[in-house]
Length: 354
Image (cartoon, rainbow, N blue to C red; front, top):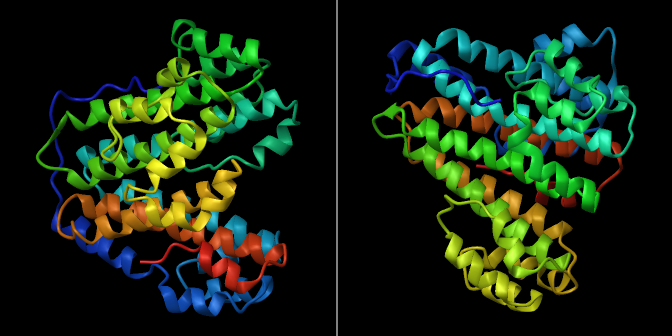
């Protein structure tokens, strides 16, 4: 799956033309005052508001088929795809390597979604509605994966070999859990990305720091989930990812020895202390849902801070992509919350704002 051929050294120059275009696109991103207004609206009003912004083309194109919340959600997908395609057009071939490497994350998400659908015996149409069509896989490729009869077939058609996923699939057959398969996919992705980084000439600190933060969040989630499931410490070790900045593998091994309450106490002494404090009571009851959402918000907020530290480099491009994805995530949270009647105060707390 991650077997594209790259030059031994990729010199990613950031051309003034591209910088100007990306900054113009960045200027269209929603700001806090936009979200303040949207929090007070309902489906049709939200669609009308989006129509007066960068989403106009998408709203108008889809408005003949959809309405209300469905129209808004479809327009969000359409807009993100359109903007990613625009980036690919205005960037140099070398920068396209960087873009595609980043977009592989959506392919991984889609493969996981299809595998979950297979495990739950869901209909293909229901699974297809959950896919995010802004990775590198074409609609035809996703359709081929969806129509595959087995998990093994999905992974083979995604580009992996039997030998690569044999152990993970054996774990699924024994435990009826996708934990090892999803862990295999994530490790393949991050291994590829760190290898790709070594081919980039020059400094790309933002890219590296974003990856390290993602890995820290993944490791903390894994640590707590595995401990909750009662997985033995020696078995937990194989699931962790290397490359994080807050938690080295040795630190994770030390934490894995502790009981659940001990892990929570140890995490409260790290830079995650604020997130732990908010969700401590639930955590001590081994309820992870709120804490994991809090971790995601912490991760995205940290990413926004990083984006402001690298304003005049090739990382501006990566920064825009990440910020655009955060915008789509915010709008999806807001739209889904409105659809289910959640309070504006609660939804405001779920938004990630710069």
